[in-house]
Structures are given as structure tokens and as C-alpha cells.
Image (cartoon, rainbow, N blue to C red; front, side, top):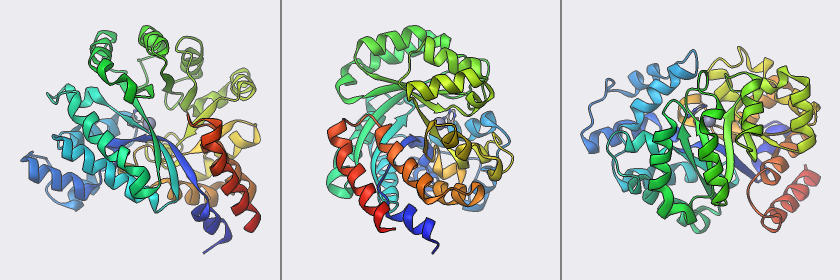
Length: 337
Ligand code: ADE
Ligand code: ZN
């Protein structure tokens, strides 16, 4: 194993951009379809895998929402989340901040309480089972209306003590952050953390809106910020974390080749970038795979890898006291490698 790959494996890491529904592996998709008697257009693993070829975000989202249809019960959501946690524990992930898409479930008649109960059951057991801490972030689907978002916000109210933040995902182009300014105001007043997907496919103007109107604490993706020097300077000077997802960017043709991925450039510009998997079952790899393939493609150094691992904790919503032991462990491992 190369020195860089050994370092990647050994380092404790946090994952800050992960859609739990995007961790639904083909095997589990077929298993849940079978146990819930859901009719899918694919019957074999080969057929499922063949469907996981995308040319843009919307292409992927169509398959992603179709895949969700097999998730029906609390147990399904628990098993899905537990499988993800078990998988990333093997990558030495020690903290996760995961998204879920309640509207992807309530829209098809699954009550709000079902996904959140199952997901939290697995997350609450994760410290003891896998040594992993967590935060839970509820995303709003931006292709739906503000009214739909407020309906979901009302359903979430009994759960607000268990939800740490809100996010914004789904089809970016044509659905600017400003569509959800009032939802973000409500969540801010409720004391929640605020993140949003911006600049994945959408223009720098959407990143400005996410900062100025939604007043977000962290940017999900943010790749297209690099087209605007003033925006780069602003994100850098404010120390705002970017949750970057290299293999997702490759699968969704945000970059044509991993060698063109801007991660190294982001670090060189002083931006606080992190490495994440987004929807690992669909994009070909969990966190370490994202680190490994990107390190190889763009030539990440030992110091780059250390910076990325540290950013994953300092960019998390853990308190400074909670971050400290992870940062100390990273320093110890860095010195030994
Ligand atoms: N939902 C799941 N993954 C997503 C992504 N990469 N962008 C927008 N919405 C998503
Ligand atoms: Zn995402």
C-alpha cells in the first residue's frame, strides 16, 4: 500500500456530506424491494448497476427518488443507516453529519415519523456499536415549493430537539436558494445550523444567495465559487467550510476527469475544503475511496491529506472540546507517518 493510502486509512475522519438515502446499495435495494413487495423496473444486480450511469444531476436524481420507493418501514431506515455506519467505521470515520430527505418519503405517503425514528435509532446506537458520533440534518427538496417546505417544517417541529440543522438539495438549476429564505429564517430562529447545496451545477450567484439570504454556516459542494475571485476571497476570509464530493462530481459530470477536480486548487487558495461521498452507493465509493482516487488524480500530498482530515472536524458542528481529541489523534498519526 502506498504511504498516502496508509495515511488515509489510519486517520480519523468526519463525513459532512452524506445523503443517507444515497447509501442504498444495489443489494439492499433489491432486498428491501423484495421484503416490501415493491415492483422495480430492474430485477438483477447487473440491471441496477447498469442504471447507475448518469450524465448530470437530474439524471441521477430520477434514479435516486425511484430507489427511495423501497424504503417503507422504520426497520428499513434503521437497517440502511446501520449499514452505512458499519461501512464507514471500517474507513476510520469517527463522526458523521448526515442528511435525510423527509419529503422524498412523505410525498409517497410515508409519515414523517417513520424515516426519522429508524435513522435516529441507528445513529443513537452508533457511538457504542462503532465509535461514531453524529449530527442529523434535514434537507428540503428545492424543486418543491416553499409551501411544501413549510408543511414539512410543521411536521418536523416535534422533532426539533433531535434535528441539528437544515439543508437544501435536489435539482439546483432554476431553484435558487432565495426561494427558501423564509424557511431558513424559521430554522435560524429555532437555533438550528444551516447548510445548503450551492454551486454544484448552479452559478456563483446561487452561492452568494446561500450566504447572503440563507445565511448558511457551511456550503455543500461550492465548486462553481471558483469562477468568481471575490467570492473565493469572501469564503476564505470567513473561514466557511466547503463539503466537496469528488467522485460525485465525476459521476454527475461536474468534472470530466478526476484530474481536473478543483480540490487541490481549493486548498491552495486557502479554502477550507473537506472530502465526502455524497451518495456513495451511486457514485462508486465511500470516504476513503474519495480520498484515495482524488489523491492519485490531483497529487494530494501528505500535508494536504492531514489538512483535509483536520478540516473535516473543524468544519463539523462538534464543539471545540469534542473536536480536540480527534485533532490530537490526527497530529499523532501525522507525526508517525
Ligand atoms: N440529493 C442527493 N444527492 C444530491 C446532490 N449531489 N445534489 C443535489 N441533491 C442531491
Ligand atoms: Zn449532496
